[in-house]
Length: 359
Image 1 (tube, rainbow, N blue to C red):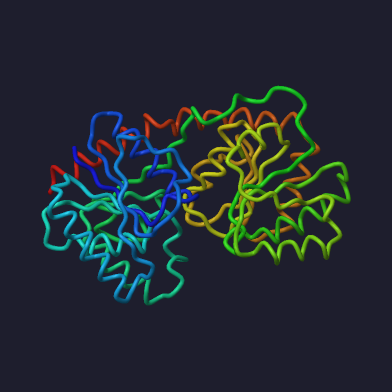
Image 2: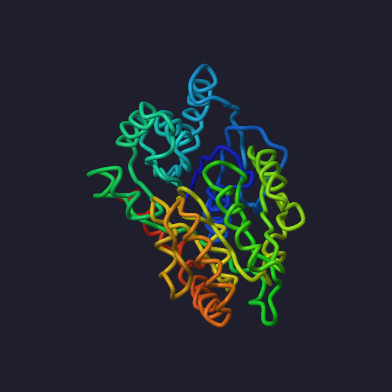
């Protein structure tokens, strides 16, 4: 097959990571694979094999002349390159890709990667997206809740496929005494509700003063979070560690992983933490990704969104019951088999074949 992926960038992000894994694996299986980006960038955050072609069409804005320039250039590319299928990721890019392909014979599969109730933020834009999505040929969603949001056509022909985990990237399960360290890995933005985690740790630190909290990632809230940490007198206990390429090695021997998000798609950071065998706590955030991964009290703990007291109680339980916490962590390792790259890529291949056949 000749496959084109479209995505904004290959900088750090869950969708970008999935595109890199799919592109590499599909190319390894003998397919012609190309990724077209719509923002210039210096380098990819993810390894891309040499037999995967990368091209770029510059377009910063969703609307305006850049939008039309991008659609025109992408349409020419799809028309003349004779792809068997185009696969698009992320809502803004999906809109551009669908519009670019109108009237062409090449089928378009769009993949939604985040809570569609929350992104885009404006109700009008969400309505426009929902209408334009009806023009696509196939849909890959991350959760059943996400699939149900989009209505009859998506429910009829769409499919739920979870994110793959590249087990080759994962360090071995840590055996030994874990560091007295709690970790979070996420962007520093409002969606992740890191202030709740910091305020919860303020309470935890009084009861368990030998623990620290390391937060990995970058984002627009860094200055605000630094101010909050300093105001609580926790600058020697909570550390904003920035983005690290070797983050999995850095967190592998930690005592606890926490995801405090207000909403998520399928959280890659949680997937990776579970595959490492870390005891995990996550908010049961819409649109159901964490609940797909965690069976509460069996392989992790789920807490209500925005509930600081529930988070405090969950952390205390994990720290004060290390045998139970480690048991949940060991159970979580099964995620490696469920979401292994070959399993997930086979699901994608089967769906791609189905959509090409229908078209």
